[in-house]
Image (tube, rainbow, N blue to C red):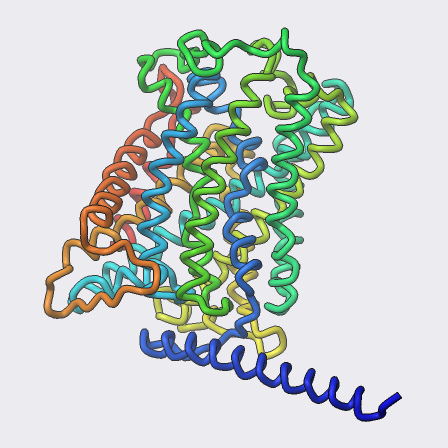
Length: 506
């Protein structure tokens, strides 16, 4: 054997490695230059690849686990037809919002996300107050999102226990809150890992998420006899409408079904909050948002249609487990098969909590770094050990426990946190979208578009205006109590909390 052969191969590998290292360094340097132009010193290692970033964006929405958590709301308030039509209606509107956010994230790829963008899309004299209010709204929405998702996961786990014991098990508020707090603490520990481990861990989330959803759809269709599938009039027509609100008119009862899709397809800007850990962030972050919104909207619609198609009698779905989604699977697949698949549905909810806590902790870090918190920058600190904001992670974890404790006082007040998530986050989204258009010709505001840009033509304007009007509409809708007559027990407190945060921060 020629001894020079292996040496040449080795030299070629070394040359390729050096070339890849140079390209990686150039990409990271370009990202850091963009960050420095916005006014920040790079603090994180850019370990998230394109695949990991897309997986992160999909995971933050959850898809099958988020639908499982909120499926009872449209089903019981508006009926099966509300489940089907409200999802696709909301998904189309969420697409306009997601596209508008991707456009801004591409121009401002910082972990501060939309509060940083808002402050830079208005004249200097308004920057402090605008950034302050948007920052607090965004943090409120994210904390409520973490809490409601973790709370939903705890309920999903207990629902499996109830089904496994054939309904012969009582789940108390104390058990739910205890499991909820334990899960949050575990996610806090996981988020303490270095960025490279988080990136590797996150990469596989999207495959589990989409794989479980596809498997549920296929198994339900295969295991449901054709004769027992509901007709089209039940799935899409008037036969599937049920007003379960106790007094609201049929139109409002039907539109309450939007809570499921709006809660699932939110936290779009989560990818922005990890953008300082993403390679080629100005391209990767907005692209991931766009892909995740389209994918979640379309695949989620298919899942909802199949669930309604195979659901059986409506009265059999509101049982002790509290999960119509699980009851449908148990009916069609059998209890062992349903519980097996339910394990993976719970796993996707686990991934949602993991990514949501990571995103929110980066927001808290950035807000503290920008002196938006009264902590003198204490939480704006990056650990030299893990190169992650450990202080912000544990502050966010502790803060997220508080909303879940409401269940000990009032389950209805706890459920308002789901509506609060969509309201607070969506309001924080439309403010920078509005500011970009309102101050487009202002001499002190210079918006420099990023690679993802819809332009100033009809497409860009129509998308921005539609998403603003839609968000204002759903915020009004989600402020309404879902049941009549209104009492102190069933009052929807989401609007009170959101309005209180805006007033106090203002």
